[in-house]
Length: 117
Ligand code: 5GP
Image (cartoon, rainbow, N blue to C red; front, side):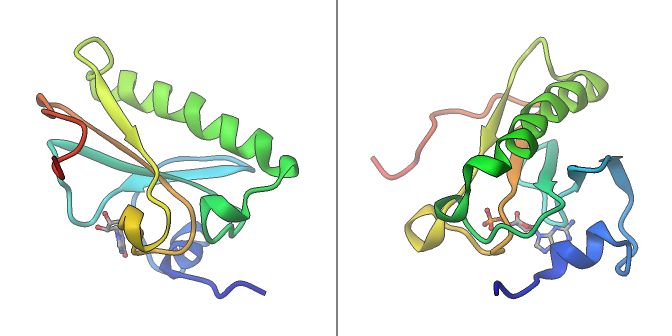
């Protein structure tokens, strides 16, 4: 059984965080430490620790994350200029919170995709 993270408490609003979107499958809210002018996290309501743990039965929620990203990008006024969707996995991916999440970042030019090379 995977251990809950702070994101489960945000989903249940036990830690009050303004939600930008919530339905039966996904929840979205602003990152506490934004890395760009717009930085939103979109997460499945179900606790899935890493992308390695995703199952076929999660496909509806994972697809919903993308359609919600599209909607929020439009709401934020960044759709036309563009943005980046990021999912980090495990230590090499830089994952810090073990409840999968999609970062929606934009609102400014984001430069090269990776900074390692
Ligand atoms: P990761 O590195 O796991 O892909 O990203 C985790 C993200 O969650 C980080 O960008 C971090 O700033 C964000 N984060 C961690 N704790 C909280 C929190 O309590 N509230 C919010 N809104 N964001 C958080």
